[in-house]
Length: 63
Figure 1 (cartoon, rainbow, N blue to C red):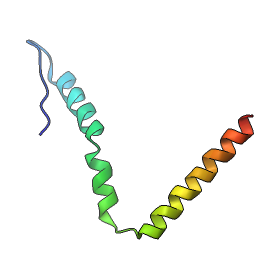
Figure 2: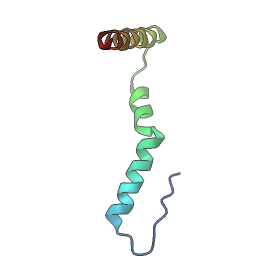
Figure 3: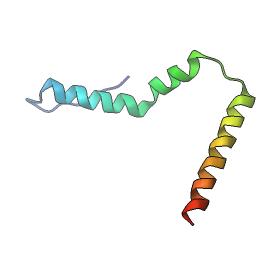
Figure 4: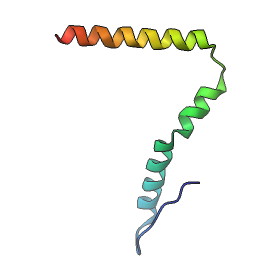
């Protein structure tokens, strides 16, 4: 459960902004999207490998 502490006289827009920020940090929406469709472990590993190769190429290009 997300709890947002409010100060006296704080407007609702500011409180909503705080709530949205805390909600994003929890990663609930990412988890829901990830669970919508099952992905095989081999596909997940392949994506990780491709990302690592891409990042390595970027780092090598900088040097």
